[in-house]
Image (cartoon, rainbow, N blue to C red):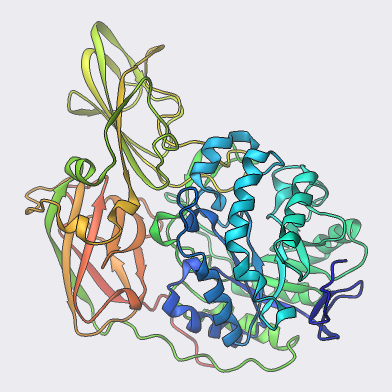
Length: 590
């Protein structure tokens, strides 16, 4: 087994040791990028109060390197690890490069997957070289905070659930070597499903293997022992809940059942990482998507903005019934009793309403904030237009005269709006020529798991009139980060909605004091919301999520400005929105 060169933390044949003493890791997943930074101390304090001694986090590459060589605050990981130490927690870091996490593209940058295609997550240099550059930029945040240097980091993961995807052991070996070359000296680990083919494909000799499951601890650990006869037993992802897709019914997990399964993990002598201890929110439109079916290659299913996950600490940071039951179970296995709960964050004092009295039509928003309009031989993908999150407007001429034949968009997923001579029609509708064709494609998130990982976005199969491609297609992209900063939006030609429709809506909210809130969106269709320039994420009337969580630090006393980018307006668009205090689940008294 791997062991640190100093005795700070070690993996032995008998288990984990910390400073030469046996230790059981009682960890909880909390993604720093799904929680407002000002709220990290509170959420970490809630993990401690539940009885945990460790926190685990992924690192989303695409969030931190939006374009090659342009970095966006990878130091946030270091600040989070410092906050974990201040809270009295150890840390497990899962830097990827792939993370899944129900996150856009599994954390891989669109500019990379668009270039390498099916070679991603392999030893291919076209994939590995960008990984090397990224790790060179990221890993100093981990290295200087390792346990053998007095920091909180106990272990670092090699890739993520690789056995569910591939079998390139050389790739895994190169990643493990890269971590070591970069200065990682604490033990390494892998995590996979408790199935033979997954453990065979995803584990490495000399690297601690762990398993992910939500039930049947005995069976899962037996599978692990077939591949790793000695060493600690650890469930790296104890699935205590689950995520939800737009248009589907969410199914919470019974708290008593989850607590019983947690107890089973610990009774088998295992260490555990509760996934998720606190899920948080996929702010910024970063939620991923899945494909249906056993092979994960069926229908496209985008994931909702909330990553509450039915976790013991809910999206607004409050304890649930599951929290209290987990606390009782964990107290039997922790070295010290759990501390009291931290003081809850302030909530909005009273409900408030913002009237959406200003609006810009969507076409004008695209023309003003979008990229240049360019003509291509055939319809370009989002990757070719350098779009991670956002939408693309395509325009083409259907020549004529010609009879009415089906106009189709093979390969198009996400949200598609097709108009012919200004009239909306469904893809596949017979259309005669000549005609002006316009297609708007809105990305609802890239697939984050399975064989469709890295698939392109947009009109990936072109525009077909019966069997003939339309060529000479113009395209203009609107990226969500075009809304970063208020100056560009303030310069838009806002006007009264007067019937509205798709476009950017603006409203103002005056508050006596900030506090955690929930944004209700009556009359809204589908789109993305910003508050004071902070992107709260996607909303959609199809449910099951019907509101958006608003972190208190995003609000301020006095004037607050809200933007709704409505891409699928209902009945002329929303007239107003409302805010209420964010207590999603009432806390139980201890």
